[in-house]
Length: 301
Image (cartoon, rainbow, N blue to C red; front, side):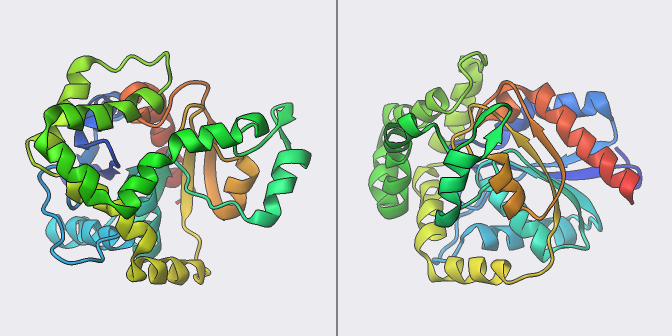
């Protein structure tokens, strides 16, 4: 695609994914518009991207890194952003720090911390689609959370322990990562063994298991991360965002809470299938909504 006619879009992955998650998604996007130009970097510390040498490489700092990649290295004046998992957080930060460059942001894992005061309302008084909404059904809440969170606590507190174990054994790498693909995807989706192995190789061949897991610790415990979150919370500017809500996503957040957190949602779509790895599970479904976001932004501008 010629640089003048292209529609540049930055695609951001998360853990335990990689850039290969988008291989079918970009094909689906090109069917909708052949002028899309995709920039798909591995996050710092993931795959073939160098890890930081000092502490502080949290999602906000990663947003600065990819912002420099797009504007200074690749010389894009304007571009769109799509992200899931860590990519959704980085994309949202990027929209804050580059409001003049980011034309639109699409995320498929909205990151929302539900206020304690809102939980009773969400559980007992608010209804969506004819049923009571909630972070999770009350009966499933303790067990579901306990089943999902151990990996997060492990990587947020002792990433070296699990990382070095994975670096020593391809079986350990496969066991730790494939467990997440099994638990976080739509049971009806059909991710091939070849795609799963290709994703694993981005970690095994590069030895990036530990540096990738360290992002959890940087996000939850580093002082710079806390400062960045406070800074963003104090901003009055609210970037526009489009959101795809997939039913088998890792965390389920009611739409009313998501809309209270993201102040300027231009498109919110609840999908009837798909999970955490939406770009790999149902690339055409995700592509349609992302393309819709682009069309809306061009129409509005």
